[in-house]
Length: 222
Length: 284
Image (tube, chains in turn brown, red):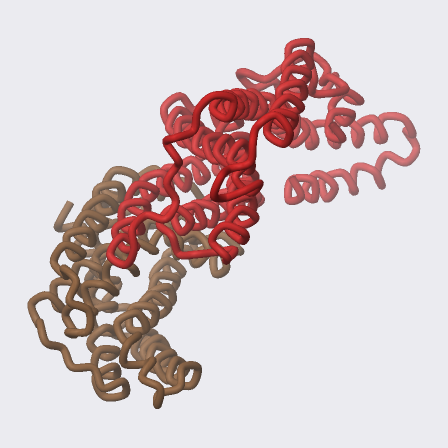
C-alpha cells in the first residue's frame, strides 16, 4: 500500500514539476487573495492584523481547492481513471499517494502564504511548534477530505462548481480549528491552541481512515 | 403525481429489474393508510395551532414569541430524524445495493433539508423579538446552517445526470461523508462559540402543564407529518426511477412500431432508428 502511495505521489509531483501549474498559477493566485483581502479590509484600521489567522486559512482553502481540482482533473482526462484501475495499484495506496502529493503542494503554498502574511500583514509567529503542527495537521485534513470529494467529483462535467459546494462546508471545522490554533501561535488570542490542534488531528484521522476504506468503490464509479 | 401518467401509458415496456413494480403505475401516490395518516396530521396540526395560539398563555418574559416553540422544536427534531434516516439509507444501500434504500435516503434528505430551512426560518422569526437580531453566531444556529449547506450539496449531487447505479453510489458516499462530518462540526462549533459566550439557546426546563402537552403534541404531529411526506416523496422518487428505466424501452418500442407499419418506407426509417436510440441514451 505504501509503495503504491509513493509511486502515485511521485507521479503527481513529477507532473507538477513538469507542468508547474501550482507554481505558475495557484501560487500567484494565493498571493493575489492576500492582496485582495488587504483591499477589502482597510489595512490602516487594524482589521488585517486581527484577522490574519483567518485570512491565511481562507487563502489556503481557496488555493487548496484549485490544487485539488487540478490533482483530480489529470486523473479524469483521457481515460486515466480506467488506467489507474487497470494498473493493479491498491486503491488505498492511490488515495494516500494523492493525499501525499496534495499535502506537499499545499505545504509549499502555506510557506509562501506564511511569508506573505508576515511581510504584508505584519504577523509575527511566536509559538513555532504549535504553528508548524497546526499547519501540518490542517493540511492533512484538507488533503484527505479534499481527495475523497475530488475523486467523487472528478470526471463530472460540473466538477468545478460541485467540488467547492461539497467540500467547503465539510472543511468548516478545519477552518475554525486551524484559525484558533494559529491565532494562539501568533500570540493574538491566548486560547488553548493545542486543543484545537487535537481536533485537527481527529479530523485528519477520520477522513484518512474513511478514504483508505472507501477509495476503491469511489474509484470504480465512472 | 405528474410523472405517474407516463409509465401507465406504456405498461408493456420490458426490462423488469429486481425489485421493480411490474404493475402499471398508480395515478396518484396516496393510499388508504397515507390518507388516514394525512388526516391525522391535519387534525394534529389544527390542535397544535389552537392550543399553541389560544389555549396556552403567553410566556412571562418572551411574550407571544415563545409560542413558536411548539413549531420550532418539532421541526428541529424532524430535521434530525430526516438526516439520520438519510445516513441509514445510504449505509444500507452500500450494504444491500437495493434501490429501496436509496430512494428512502433521497426522500428523507429532501424532507430534512426543507425542515432545516423551516427550522432556520422559525428560529430567525423568534430571534428577532427575543434577541433583537435575526441571526447570531450561536453554536446551534451555526451548526444548523452548516448542516443545511452540507445537505444542499447532497441534493445537488442527486440531481446530476448519471446512470442509476453511479448516482446511488455517489450520493451514498456524499451522505456518509456528510454524516461523519456532522459530529465534528457540532463539536468544533460549540467549542468555538463557548469560548466567547455561554450557550444562548437552551430550552426552558420550567415548561409544564398545557404548554408541555402542546409541545409533545407538536412533536408527535410533526413526526407523523414527516412519515407522511417521506412516504409520498418515496413513491414519487420510485416512479421517477421507473420512468427513467422505461423511457428508453418505450422509445425503442415506438420506433419499431413506426418501422413495422409502412413497409414501403422501410429504408428511410431503418436509417433513422440508430440515431434516434443514440439520442435517447444520451438524454436519459
